Length: 221
Length: 221
DNA sequence: ATTACTAAAAGACGAGTAA
DNA sequence: TTTACTCGTCTTTTAGTAA
Image 1 (spheres, each protein chain N blue to C red):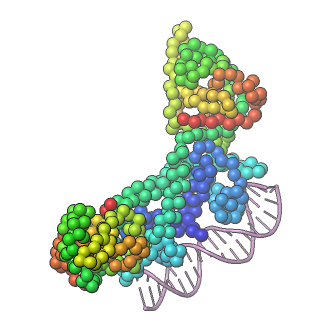
Image 2 (image 1 turned 60 degrees about the vertical axis):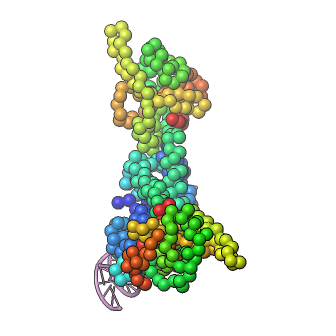
Image 3 (image 1 turned 180 degrees about the vertical axis):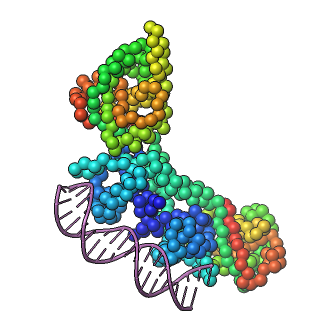
């Protein structure tokens, strides 16, 4: 079995050029690059050699090291993992949270024509007059913050009846089978643990949701 | 400082989807995936949480884990290393070896017109009648084997004067400033620790090489 | 079934030494 | 300077226990 600290060492040698030919190094220089003592670096080299992940030719003042085919394959497997992680990235976030009661303001705003018009344009549906408030679980807050990096669509504010209505930002998402939108008032960038959801229908009715029920919000850019 | 075994753990969680939202897991399932005891896996999760590389929400029957921004950055740094390693790959091998005496057969074959004609076509120069034999250092053998994966160009055999001359394969390379070719008789795929080099000039004369002198062969596909 | 903690065993680390 | 080895220390691991 190849240990993670061995792989780290192998990778460092690869970065130094160990895949393209032999690399000249000393235990000290390698140890320095890896933040460890020369002794430990030397032991790493020995164990990697024993596992045929690299070959060495030791000289009185250092050693020539080359990564073998097996070593390359090990690195490639690791590389493939990272590719999988970052390639499919952005293909979808998924946040879990529980339904909570809002202040009922959502219903009022969702009935204002300039907002409705923009939502239709941006999300492709006429929002049900009312919002569903979801409190994101503590462990989901990290993913919640990541959402801020995505491309939110601006909703313009407007003036009507001598009153100013603020702007907002909006992101398409999905709850179960229903296409929805996350709507965040203003332009604040800082995360909130409560997300306000709009949908073409009443989600509470459609899925029989009560306060405390858990739902999953899926964001697929 | 983030240790390699912690990064390994973080990567595994990322593969499970920890970058896209929370992942449900238990110490046991994670330990199984990482080949370690549940206790160790639990400790990993705790230390990763302490370093704010992930956040957890522990429940009586498992935990929801999400990778934080810091965690993602750590993974991204690692990914960048691997990209560097494999992107520039194939940009050049470099083999070290020492000059040895051949059997003098090279001179004869290099003077045969059908061979010469093909070398001119493939390598772009008329080979000096004679080959330089290089014994690859033991530590370079791994890189030597890697050469077999590259695209060698076939040299056709022929019949002349009632005698059959075998084929060979050939790969462009460089020794110091001189463009050269590695030539391997037949179609054997198994590595040899001696490489036969042809060049437009006598490399021995051009660089004053004697037996035992070290040279570097650079292959840049 | 979990997580978290404790304690004994195992293993890794790095200083020191020799070649 | 190297590498390679030994040895004492310290960390890490895992089994066992409790919640």
